[in-house]
Length: 407
Image (cartoon, rainbow, N blue to C red; front, top):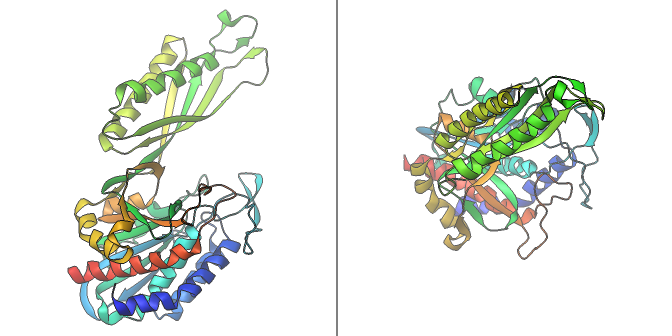
């Protein structure tokens, strides 16, 4: 790593940790990150950057122009928290409460977005002090609502793109990271191509014919039809999808029907998710799910419709960009600490940026080495080893410099 950048990163490590702890203690849900955005903007303005707020409701963007002209690289961090009640013993534990979808809940950075934000705030401070090393422009994107906006609202990467975040100046490449509670500190994991899944939300509405539970032959049972549809959908994965190429998942997570034990209801609703890592598989699975649900319902005397909502696209690491930037990761973390991994069926709306410009997204170790009981993301006991933040600051800083200067 550039010795000057490395020295600056080590110098502000404790400051980055302090930012992270403050953000963790006072988390905010998607599209409601008002105070979080204020803290970020205040820091960026103090650095003398060109700062714009209110993008995609609560997003913050800052622009740093290097001393020499060149291309533009974007660095992205997500800033929202989750409706999870924290139950660990951290001194900066979140005590924030709110109502989410009419349910009282705690609010917690249970996915590490607080670390991503703190890391990028640190990167902004380092690069601002070393404009002389930058051939081009760095755009810092602090994105709200990565976990998805509330029902009925727009938000996240899609809305940022819609509002022009990749324009003026036009972004040539984008980098992002995600800390991982199950990856040892000091380790970086990556995958060229499809690294995280496209995420679809589906709703299947089954229409039958209501009747008395004692006389099912006088009606059409949407619950039985739903059971047959659920069973049939799984054959799309087990019998029609070439899983040796890429993984795919169909999950029905909720089914609602009926009001009383002795009434066969008129309708049933199923809600679930599809995860795919290949565009052709995605298209085929969605088409077959539509055909199968309709045909099965018809075979049993009912009807079915299916509605789709795309939550994320495939998080696709540009092959050329990944190959070019890999030496930067290896040079900072050590070649032995940069691991090539398989794809995950989790989703990330960073994928929408990658549909517009070449992008590279990787995973940063946040687990104390040797820990056998790391808690998963999105859980009340989730924890991150803060010693992993320094590597994130170093890598993101050097990626920006190396990309621009290689142009």
